[in-house]
Amino acid sequence: MARPEHMRGIDNLPSMQRYNEAYNEARYGSGRATRTIEEARALTKQLETLRTAAMRDKYGPANLTKTLNEQMKKETLWADQDSDCFESLSWRNGVATATFWHGGDLTYTYPVDLETFLEWANDDSLGGFFNDVIR
Image 1 (tube, rainbow, N blue to C red):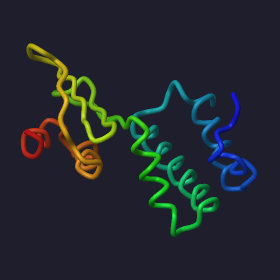
Image 2: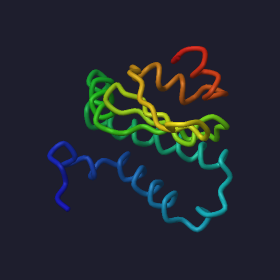
Image 3: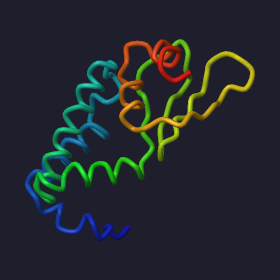
């Protein structure tokens, strides 16, 4: 697959090479199947730090926030914690999609800005946040 125009040259940056090595180890490494959820979250945080450093090297600090926001608007974000309320919770383009474990029609969508979704996805209780803020 050809590299997208916005990615050309970034693979030559040392920070991107560190990210690629860490990503490949995380995805294909030997300990992948035996990681706990805490280890997986710590690894995700480490990868995000490396990715941010690579983007900062490519775009410079002034354009980093704008570039990250544009990229996040194109991607689907997922809440990755266990929940008694939700089978899955995702966000894309200002819309949160929540699939409940119990009930009639199990999947609903809610207009939610990115900042609110990130708070929701990182709250100790996805269902509690839903009841207090979203509903």
